[in-house]
Length: 332
Ligand code: GLV
Ligand code: GLV
Image 1 (tube, rainbow, N blue to C red):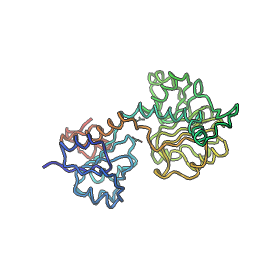
Image 2 (image 1 turned 45 degrees about the vertical axis):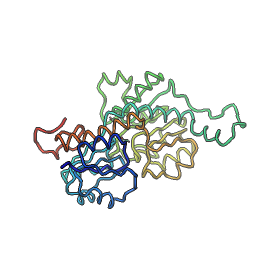
Image 3 (image 1 turned 135 degrees about the vertical axis):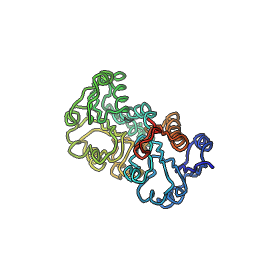
Image 4 (image 1 turned 135 degrees about the horizontal axis):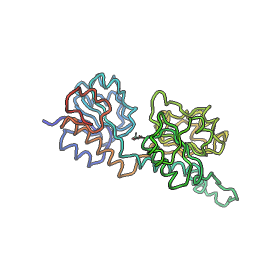
């Protein structure tokens, strides 16, 4: 008989159809919000699970699902996985890297443009019927073209944002990363490596694209915000918690920086109420990778990881392949 898998949230019909060729599929197509206990009840007799970036896999859940072998995340980030607990339980995790880089870089630029040029703020004002109150400096923002773009986290997405800035908008690009890029990649992105402090002090716009780890929590807090220019924009398309949201709301309210664009939040889907009351901010519900083509590609990659591992013994993008042992069936 076919292996059994669970799809934790509603999913593209074509993804369910593809998975059904290989597996007995239970899917949460009504998108019911399960508690962790309900999630465990649905998962306890399954060998695989298709998760989104908000379905939490932890030791408690794993203990209740002894047949589980793989969790395939439809996201590049996997801070919803307790990977150490998964490895201890012999459960493979996979993520969905690569396919979303350019789409996410597009959105980083969208938030940067929208924040610097006050797009959301001005639209609210227009919708509220206030256009008869025009004045000479109405929603005058900060230029993006020709300015200095500072990127913290220079993986593929950061590099995509750098290329857009350097080649499309004539920006000077500076970046900070755990490790320097090789010279060829720096040249292609026209990006110069600087310390985090120099970046914060000199960038006109700061974009965050670092993965969430205990070390990257509050990469931007009150003291970092204090280093930024009062005209600067801050954009976060990485993960909630990279920015101290309370400190950011205070900095925006006091005009210590000019504007911000956030796609991710500490404790999302809850958004700190202080962020909802400051006007000079653009807020989106974690949609940076959400073009139709890219979401389909992410779903397809998660599905291919389930099929690759449970049917062929070769996942495409494993996170903890040590759970697969030393055999020659280990996928690259
Ligand atoms: C989205 O945030 C992802 O990690 O893919
Ligand atoms: C993700 O793929 C990144 O490297 O930023």
